[in-house]
Length: 239
Image 1 (tube, one colour):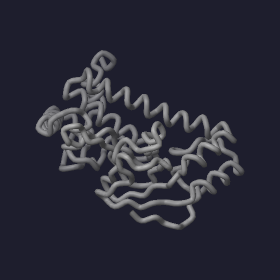
Image 2 (spheres, helix red, strand yellow):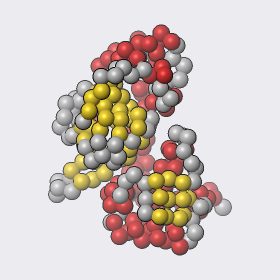
Image 3 (cartoon, one colour):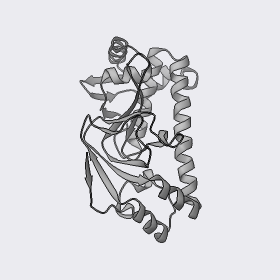
């Protein structure tokens, strides 16, 4: 892991609208710049943090892709989420002051380090930031609920369709295509996250291809029919 000593400036970052609140004045941005002062580079396959590490900071993903995972009682890795550019990692550590999962880079990545005690102090000073921190936490809770719903009540086709729709929607918010994406995670990692066996993931991808909903070339996915995916997830509202 390479810790850069270069000065990071939120004020000049093109991602600030994604990971920071809108509506901060220049004085507040300057104070934030003083707090978020370092970046880290993480090589593909390396950990940003591991289970049990002391929690000191949140991390804003500046570039790259991460997965978070926990080790189950029988020693398997269970993927709990995928995080991309403009998203915040590390919220799991707030509860017990120690991280409860591993965060692994799926490609070479860079993060901005946000020391939590200083962010917390600043958020007490200006309510826009406090509201935003609460919003980020709330988003994580909602995402956890969505995953539970996904795993608890959906068939394999519904799970994969919902996953692809969510992924492309998040990427589109970052200026990427609404219909094309490169999967940074393996089929096995998708299966672990969605509670599906590898063969089931591969079979479901093939089924979507046969039905003309998507086109797949290794990790490249072209969504030919967004409505087709929506129809699988929620047939009632798509008639």
